[in-house]
Length: 295
Image (cartoon, rainbow, N blue to C red):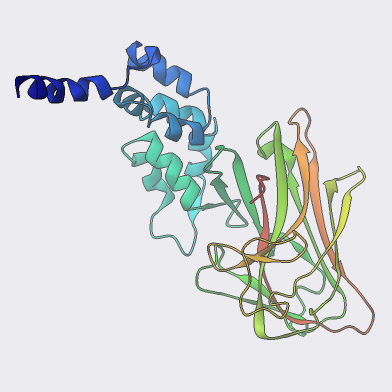
């Protein structure tokens, strides 16, 4: 019996894994190392030990994941219609980690409400959505062809709804200097189709993405959402729309690499101009630019 008790007493100690040598470093040193990784890596490293978990919560870590100009961006912003908090309250949050996560999950409006700004949760890279009002929509100000309306859950006060056109052309531009350098980006049209929409089934839509003054990337996409299926999958071949977490649809327009070594303008074009082919029921919220991560 004495031998049995001795064995059971020793058992937990024998099963205890040895501490990592890194765990013996001061928390400040560990925090400095973690701040040189990514937000995703920081969350993973917080599982290594209690020391790593504590170091991964340091404000110095999450401040490195925020854009250098984050205070200026927030101070000039306004809340999205679907947001319940004001941007001014962001700077009063108790930790930089909470601020980072808020900017990931709750976009804020900039440029007088013409664009939405948010951060990519995995990398901390800057992301934007260009509103319909900030896009060039051919015939967009002609009530016979397009109308501007409000929708619950949209990021902007107004979205564009297509009434009836043959010539569908939408163009958008964004300065590359406000994007994160050294980043692979992709552009997405964010939209919906009304129940009464027509003209989009099997319609090949030509899209272009590229820097102004340079050769653009050209591809063909389709905006018809159902394609004979009961529901729309969230993953597909990249040429058809997929459903987003906010219940809107998106289709990739193209990708590009932002080196960040020179100022330029990224331009995105959407064209479906077959004569006599009338289209209706497309609701455009905007064009989103975010890091391309195969999602």
